[in-house]
Length: 65
Image (cartoon, rainbow, N blue to C red; front, side, top):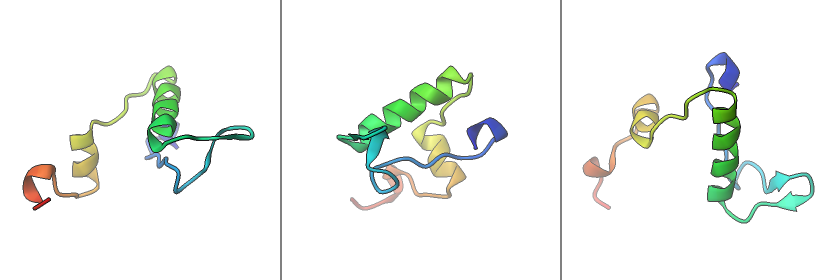
């Protein structure tokens, strides 16, 4: 998906495993793994602000929590 310009989704709600037969310990572990793969492919990971803009989400400055 990323190689074709698409978005990626990652986290324990999508997959419990980080590798073959190895349970992930956190979402952060999965994000770090995917980030490494994406960067090794020569691609750039969006910043949180870029992701919020692409998904039309409010930033922390626009929510009351």
